[in-house]
Image (tube, rainbow, N blue to C red; front, top):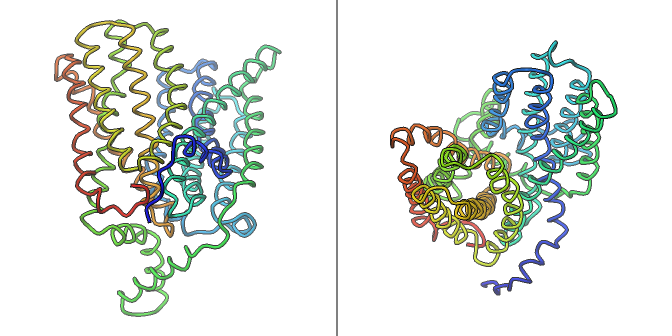
Length: 457
């Protein structure tokens, strides 16, 4: 039976659900480590006198986030001794990663960057790996907070997860910067090292908060995983220690992929993967070159900061929540079409700015519109792939779909600068092309939309 359509007030009340607070906390837990390995690490190295190139190369540790799907099957399958029994499968993994991050901060607090740069970067890499691993589990636990048939709550949860991530990242950054400045002002010599101990306390507080995030106690995940193992074992044709091991490994790695194609059918599954890969490419091309465009057209760093950064964060949070409400009311798939159309229209605003020349009001409108479309697109995209996953392999399938989306943005968009050069700096044509780039993904979605097995279409 079709659900009665909610009014805006009823949709807004979905955010009052206590599960949304838990998802907000999970988002903050996911966003906070970025403070450590992004702004805090970069500023620490800068103030220790290290070169810009060294700081830039240190950023390579972020590469692990693009590949976390490779070990996601382990997260779905392996249980942590003691922690899993006491806390549950998902929370056990999160707490283990939080402990690793906490120990890493303690190591950072006692080393000198100029004398132990290799160790410092290695510890940063450990934090990045732990954070990327934690993200796999956080996303799985977030999805599992919502029942399979609750499409509207999944859309609201996607919005809260995005807001939570930004909150953890921004609030963590504020704590880090003010703490470091305070310690520096009172004369603490190794003020950054002392700051990392304070940030360690934040980690502990987040773990305490995690204890209030319920993990579903009863789950048939393990039983279904064993069924897949048995199916693979049957195909192998014999039953011994070698075939049992092969079935276990194949089930762990291949089970999520088999499940995805079995659930959707081969053609629809390929259509979904094509859409996920292509959806944000136009936005990524624009985003990669936007700050270069702003400078070339004549805007100052101050103007870029006001419109692109400060207003951008406020706009992102507000319209992420509104995007969640829109997805609840209109359905996730319809929201994807709206977000895609909005992204295309926004890129046309940048083309208009390129053709008319420097205009502060048009710049403000274009940047704010871009943030709104990005907020809508992110909520719709997160909700969409959250609804697609099989709860037997939540962590693996979500990580894989998210990574495919990331791969589309990072691989193809890396040629954005070359495209501008090829166009001889014709920014207007460049933005028209980024508008056209949105269309293939929407064609993929249109072809498969009526056959998708997701809630809240």
